[in-house]
Image (tube, rainbow, N blue to C red; front, side, top):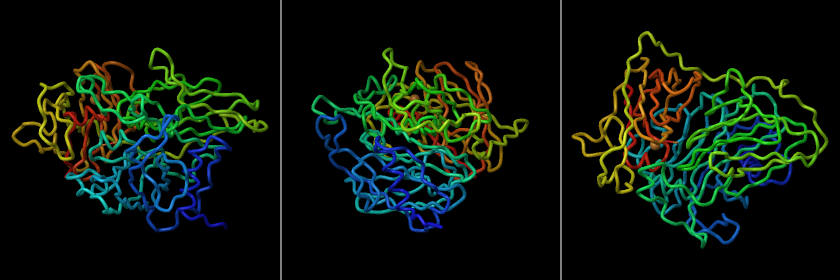
Length: 469
Ligand code: C2O
Ligand code: CU
C-alpha cells in the first residue's frame, strides 16, 4: 500500500481547492492520517492580490508550515472521524490569536476561546490543539479573538472530517465564501460602520470564493461531485442556487440529511455549511453556475465546467453518507431556557475579553455581553451534565441572527414561522419575529459560548455562554 503522509495530503487538498484548472479529484484518504505529527498552521500577515488589480496589504492568512503553494487562501484541513487530529497554531501575527474549531464537539480546553477555554496565543507563541472529531462532515476553523478584524482580513478555513464509509464521488470542490471590505485602491477600509452593525451588519465590497472573485472549477462530465460550501463571511447571508445541473442537498452544517432534498434554493448564513451532490452535465464544456440570488441582481459565486467524456453517473446510485450522532433529547424531561434576542440601548461597551468594537447594540436576555451588569461574566444558564434542555429562542429584532453554540449540537423542534426539519446543527438562522425551540442534551462539560455569527452582532453584545457541569 502506498503511504501518503498527512502533510502531502494536506498540500494536495489545498492545491485542489485553489486551482480551477484540472479535475477536482478527491484524494484517497484511507491510509492518510496515521501520522501523529501535528499539522502546523501559521497565522501570518501579508500582501495578497484579491481583487485582480493590486495587492491588498495587511491580509491575515493561514498557511501550513513549509507549504510552497502559491494559493494564499486558508488551507483545507482534513481529519478522520474518531481519530486523533493534532494541529499546532504558530502565531506570526502582531496580535494575539486562537483557533476555534466551529461545529466540532471537542473537549472544552480545545475550543479556542480566549479567557473562556484557553489563554491568548501571543505573537511568536504556539498552541497545540488535539481532539478526535466524533462527527464527520464539513466543519471549519477561525480565530475567536479580535474576531471582526482577524476574520474580516481572512482568517477562516474549512476542516473536512472524513469517514471512509462515505460514498465515493468523482470529484470534490470546497468553497470558502467570504467578502473583503476594500476601497478603490484595493486596501482595507473600516471593517464596520456603527449604523450598519446596529442593523444587518456591514457588508464587504469584494465577493470571493476561495479568495477569488467568481472562480471556475473543472469537474468531470457526467460525474457526481461533492461540493462543500462554507459561509465564512462575517456578515453575508447567501441564497444559493445552482443553474445548469441537477443537485441534491446531502448535508447541512456538517450533518447528513436523512433524506436528501433537491437543491432549489438554500439559505446559508454566516457559520453554516452546505454539502451538495452535483450530477454534472454530460457534454464537455457545459457550464454550471452557483449563484447568490439574495440580492436583487443575482451574483455569481463560482462556476463549474464539465470536462472529459461523460462518466454517466446517476444521483440515485449514490449511497448515503455515514450518519452522525443525533440529539437524543428527552423532551418529556426537558428544562426550558428562555433566550431573548433583542437590541439594547446604545452604550459605549466596556473592553471585552478579546477587544471591543466600542459599542453595544445587541443583547441576549437583555444583557449585552459583557455589559454593565453586576456580574458581566456570569453564564446565561448553568446546565446539568446529561440533562435535556429546550432553548426557547425568540428574536424580537427586525434582523436575522445566525445563532451558534459551541461544543454541543442542537436540533430544531418547532418554530412559529416555518416548518422546521429536525436537523442536527450548531448554527440556526433565527428570522425576524421567529420563536424557535432548539433541543439539546448537555453532554459536554465546560463553558460553551453561544453567540450570533454576524460578527458585529457578536462583538456588540449578542454573546454569552452556558456552563455545563
Ligand atoms: Cu464560528 Cu464562536 O464561532
Ligand atoms: Cu445577529
